[in-house]
Image (tube, rainbow, N blue to C red; front, side, top):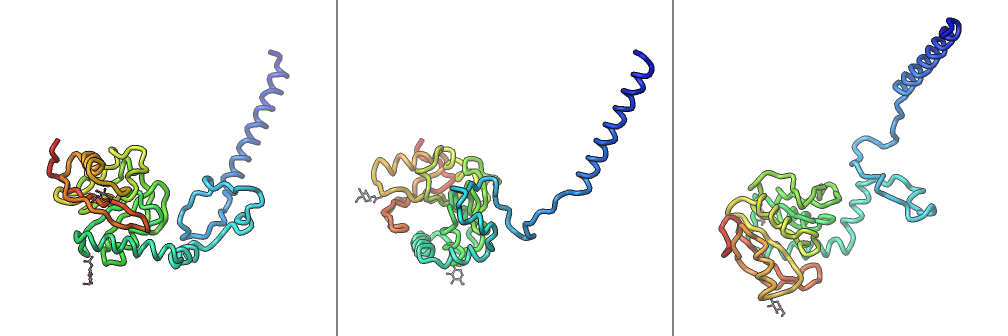
Length: 231
Ligand SMILES: *[C@@H]1O[C@H](CO)[C@@H](O)[C@H](O)[C@H]1NC(C)=O
Ligand SMILES: *[C@@H]1O[C@H](CO)[C@@H](O)[C@H](O)[C@H]1NC(C)=O
């Protein structure tokens, strides 16, 4: 290659390297600041799609989450659902103030609040999406808890689950020996109750009873963990 062309190319590379370095430095020194105030629970803005560009929420991108929660928690439907869960849990006669409870597929957390109101303070609610502070995000098929850490696991949404056997397995795993799993399912009896009880491979059937929960006729099934069922 001719000398002067080589020199020229060297100069061009040098210019590009300089530009790249300056750009990097600039980006490094000008990290954009977010406009999210501190202490805001981390939500998932990337999962929230406006239904249309006229979505009114776009004009009010920031609502105080505390205010939003208080509004929800004082709504009539919230209060009546919570009180329904309270009656449900009171009739269990299995709880005291120190019972460690896990609520699987806890939705917005009605049952968690009901238990807290009853004086049960150690309640963990999990759901695919979180509703802080009542419900944390966790995969019910793969609960992020050690074995045997809860006294009681509860779910009112076993039937909607894609893998009920898997969820039941996780409830049994995280409840201590001698603890209980409680599920509320669509009202049923006889063979259907047996079929649900058989999902619990490490527990013994304690009882099934028809109850009314959040306005629906449901059947409550109680299983005691650690004592092998008939199978
Ligand atoms: C918890 O303790 C309070 C006060 O002693 C009592 O009124 C309440 O019934 C207890 N709750 C449960 C679930 O045992
Ligand atoms: C619940 O009620 C239905 C309808 O009356 C009945 O067939 C079923 O056996 C009851 N289940 C239990 C567990 O008592």
